[in-house]
Image (cartoon, rainbow over all chains, first blue to last red; front, side):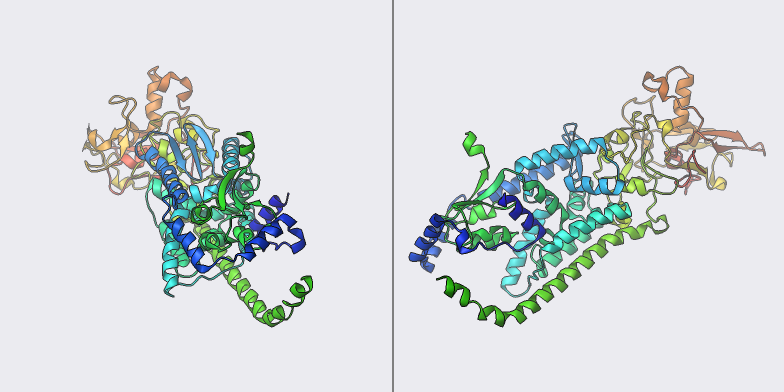
Length: 325
Length: 281
């Protein structure tokens, strides 16, 4: 139950709750106590990190994800350019081998603005809903959304510049994304136009890839420039309602990243690399209340933390599958 | 243990409160600034609606209530599936300059009109949201606009002139289907020259008139009598002066734009008005 509550709190942008000492079960407290007895020296941590950096699988999930994202988006492009009719349409709505699929957030915006339930859209939306329940909800963000990929590259540039003091990271209140969500829903409902779609970089980039570039790409460049110079991953972190829509789907998804506190060094490498670091607050010493904790639904399942963790304390889990197998 | 942990941090927060409160205030202001900025940017998308600055010729079946495109713009999910199925590639997607009309399909009739060479209204069938309404099945049922002889002085027929060559020159990329040449594949207009004693391209190539002729000959398109248009769209009427003829648009016109595309005059003598249709003038 608390997984749902925690996930919803994350999506609403509320601060993670620190467990009171008495809420931590005795065995877990003992593990923390044991760790305190043998504090991690800087050398030991560096050794662990260096050892991990040499491991051939240190970019395993990132590489898989980038390949998936590029292949999915290329499928759209190739289907149209070569006219093979495999995946027709764009990310907002498409037909895969004749079967309707619709992006959940675009379908929601259209339904709110148009105020009709369209049967094809309903079929497509439900199919996509089931798909992303199985695959993890915000998995859409990191494994499919083309803006995520360019923003990820822009983020590397931002970090490089920030290290030299040429860029800053203005941090905002994460609840602002939930406020955006409500505002964009109300705007669609009240104006009768899909107002959000005008500025949605996901739709703009997807269409630009398939149907050719346009002036709308200037908006994408403006967003990226803002993220590079002023605020790290600002669009995905503080604005995008698509993330909340898929995050809500992820609340009931069995595909999650799981944290094991026993082996964790609590050095925080995972939180430094994460786009939504608040979901990893459980990795801070004294936060875990169980041996394993599932990372909440705001997590995009991008796997960067799984890749970087020097102690393999984070891993992908499909809830219920290990029992079934 | 418990005592120390609760007693010790107490003075700390007190020292930090002011700083924390200031931090919180700044965070709130910045977040509000972002909120106002982004919502403002998205609302700017409504500006092109003023005076129908983003009004365009839309694909067949586009939801439309006279001039008002509100339903069409809101129902469109901006996926471009209509673009992908069109055999003559008549459909384009609007850019961000159209505001909330971004990614919404339109047709630039002079460059490439809809010639209904798919017969079955493929764009309508492809539309996942019904922004191109599924209520219509045949070309004659569409209401895209209404043709008008805007520049009679330039019309070759009115001037009683012949026409020889490719309708729009040999470098025009436009496609049209000529059933006599290829039933299934549209060919470039440039590859189909004409030699007419008196220009009648707008009537001769009108998809509605072609269908009526086929039906009159007992061979309706796809062998389906429902494909037969009930009304004529355009006909030639002799000029009172005796020399030349004048194209007259009739109630069967659906506004597909083929006449505008093929008109050899520059600029086109006949154009499609998007704010009129056979149902309302």
